[in-house]
Image (cartoon, rainbow, N blue to C red; front, side):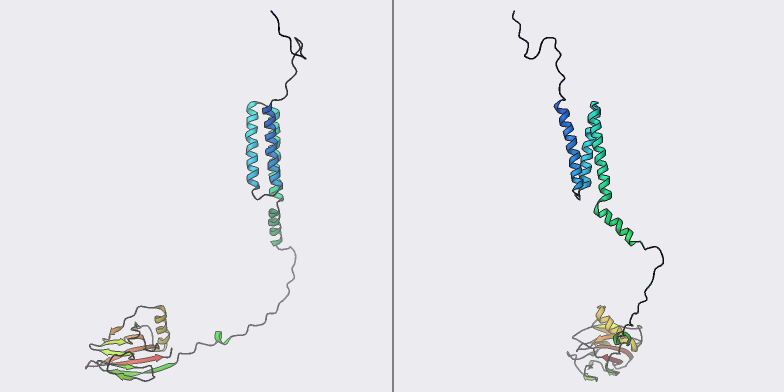
Length: 264
């Protein structure tokens, strides 16, 4: 029986040479180096997302280190550990030396007051000129009409011309009108009477009446006057604020009131 010839370059009984490192080990080392290099490059570029890149590279190195330790490849594990330490040191160094960190440190140092005696330069400030609007008291409102008015039943008065002009019908110009049963109406154009009873004297009534109107306080077009200290704010047909106070009721259904109207 013929025997196969031995392979060229080898003789029977000669030991085979040692094999080169396997490809998986070489690829793992390359991956480890690439991961560390990517992390360092991202650090050096001062990417605002540098913590994420460093963390990703660190996790990759930790996983590879654990894998090498499980395989008991101590040399490859030591290389991974070294790269991991280098990456961690680079991250710490970047955190300390980044421009924003230095600016924050410099800002806190600059904000601190300097030790030692300080010299204060006196400054002279010119007194502010007092404005008449700020110092002068508010001028009182101009009174358009102020007097006692007697109303008969089914009669009214027009007050915008500075005098009480009697009207026998409730037309658009009548500012106050007394109906049957002591029912007192304000101007038909505004139909607003604000209750001011027991709110203060006549001297401050102008401000109160304006406040009622500007604040949109609840009002009614008419009120029953049954005697007593009843006071009401109203608006005339031409829009002037007015105030009235019931003085007395008359047996024939009439009414005596005190009325003041301001220009406004």
